[in-house]
Amino acid sequence: MQVVLLAIVTFIFAIDQFSLTEILYRPIIACPIIGLILGSPETGLVVGGTYELMMVGNMPVGGAQPPNAVLGGVVGVVLAVTANLPTEQALGAAIVFALFGQYAVTLTFTVMSGLMAKADKAAEEANPAGITQVNLISMCILGALFAVMAVLAYTGGQAMGETLQEFSAKFSWLMGGLGAAGGMMRNVGFAILLKIMLSNDLWGIYLAGFAAAAVLGNIPATAGACLILVAFIGVAIAINDFTLNLKIKENAGNGGVSDGI
Picture 1 (cartoon, one colour):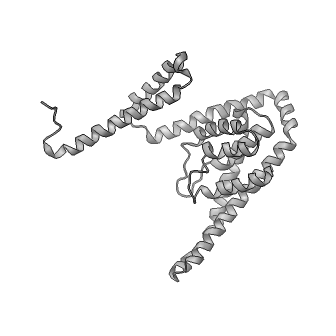
Picture 2 (picture 1 turned 90 degrees about the vertical axis):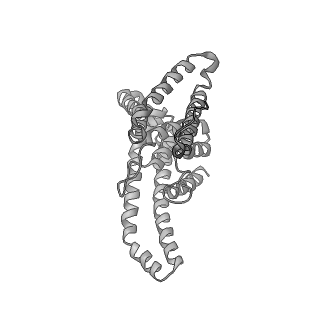
């Protein structure tokens, strides 16, 4: 039953990358679902949150595909649950499968490029069914590739669980390296996102957030809700900035903003 459910949800997540909601496939949502199927939703949530930080800044640009967010997350949860690997080590090993997912997407796009003529012909003939058929072929190819790789990772993780544990104990330096790489990549992923989004006038708010997290995290009364409190502070700053800019725009044609005097 776990194998069947794993294949079904992975198939859906693979399609969701480019169709459907384009939200379900994100690791923060997909990994807890995989964890629930495998009987450990807590592990799925931890792996999903960590992998989301790793992949948050990785976006496809044109035909260039980054390491895949779906397959890496799915395999990361599978390895963490079936092989009892720590989160960082599981995600470090899952990056290999994320590259396989990258190749699977590229392969699917390559195959489908030859079928675009069929979609163009259907469009010229005003034949929606023909266009739908091309889309369905693309979805089936991509979903099947991802489902097969997820099932292989599951069966391999179960079969090699004890072997991986022995390998981890014997070659602790290698597993330690995977753990360090997995822990570093989440910071790299967030740094990529900041490189795209962060502007010079936001550095003050960015650093203030770190300071607030450090202060609130060391107060026993607020440590448990530190992230939520920092998020509320960020929302308050965003609302204030939005309303202030809205007032400036409203009063732009009235000689400036009135000070009430």
